[in-house]
Length: 254
Image (cartoon, rainbow, N blue to C red; front, side):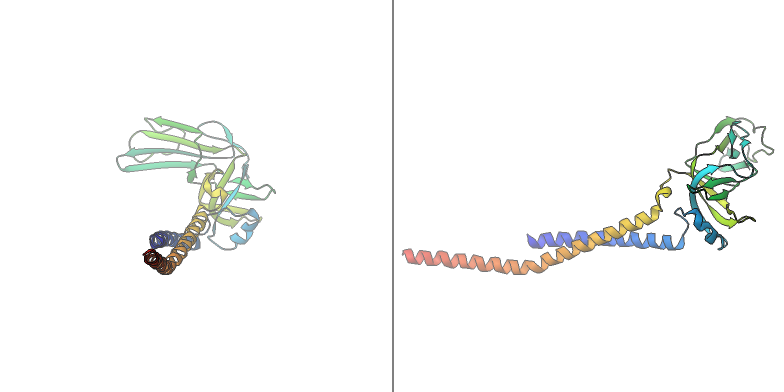
């Protein structure tokens, strides 16, 4: 029984250790090779701006930028930034026309530190559109129609100020030293998992824990297996002693 328990522990531990180690190595390599996934503090942006092409993630509250408040073109709502797009699809072909507000908006933290974002922010996650429509013809507000024929999907996304937001992009500095987030900027709602730290780092920690649990099981199983012969020997000696005692008792009775 002790041998069986030891084998189960060793086999289970080996499986957990291998799976955990492979996951931890993969997550570790991604953390090393793909920085800029977890939010950084805004007071660290000056140092990041000194490295051209550095991509970072910041989290803050949306506020008006240099352009102040503008009117969103499709919904008509007052906002500090907008993206309006119209797309048409014909089979596997799809074309999109995008128009952004002219000026960047601001993200600021609780201490009042600010970073200018955009205005070109083509990737949006967990942000609901402020306007959506399906049209037979291109929307008249746009100065260009989609190159692909077919029904037109019209969307508008806008920020009115006060939203909790994550922004990922290449950091630089304006002429007055204000940090600027540009390039292919990605915007995500503050409820995104990255707001609570890099999900990949949590995966790495989980895999390390899994590896440790596997090692513990292997060690426990090895101890059981090493103790099994001694236990079996003791059991055999006990059985022999019992047989001898029974035999002697029978002889005495005779």
